[in-house]
Every structure is written in structure tokens, then in C-alpha cells.
Length: 123
Image (cartoon, rainbow, N blue to C red; front, side):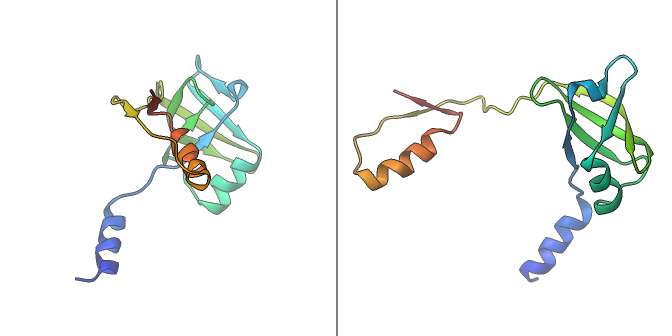
């Protein structure tokens, strides 16, 4: 079986859930709804061609992520019902400690690029 056939089979059974960002003023926690407006409406309706009942993730920019289902679609607004909210936890549980000598100038730039990863702790 070729690589292409394997990729098709993997994609066939699995669908990636779309993610969007919303301003805190668009999120109504008490009513369990999120109002998506602006350019994201065009992306959801015309580009992704999502339908009522499809699920997606919405982030408020740092404090919470919301797992939602589409309740209604229009040209001006997409109304989402919040299924549940969670606090994002993207940091790995393990810490990486780096011990490094002083590299030459050209390799120092590469080191700085990799040292900015959030899981690396410098000693």
C-alpha cells in the first residue's frame, strides 16, 4: 500500500476540529452562547461551509477555551452554543534543562531560536 493510500485512510476517519478566537465581549457565559461576527463569519459560512450542528473550538485569548456547536448561521453572525469550557493547558509536564558551552556566533542564533521554547529552563 502506498503512502498516499495510507494518508487517505487516515484522513477519512478523522476530522480536525476548527479553532477560532473571540473577544470577551462576544462571549456570554450566563446564556452559554458566543456571537461570532466579522471576517470569521465569512470563513465559517463560505470557506469552511460549516453547517448547523457542527462542533468547533473558540478561544478567548488566554483564560478559557470553549467547545461549541453551531446553533444558527447568517451572513452577519454565527451563533454558537457552549457545550463546555476549559482552561488551556499547553505546557508540557516535564521540564527540559539545557547545559551549553559558548558556541560560535552563527550557531548562537540557532541556539537562541530554540531556547525561546516555553519548556526549556536555562541553568
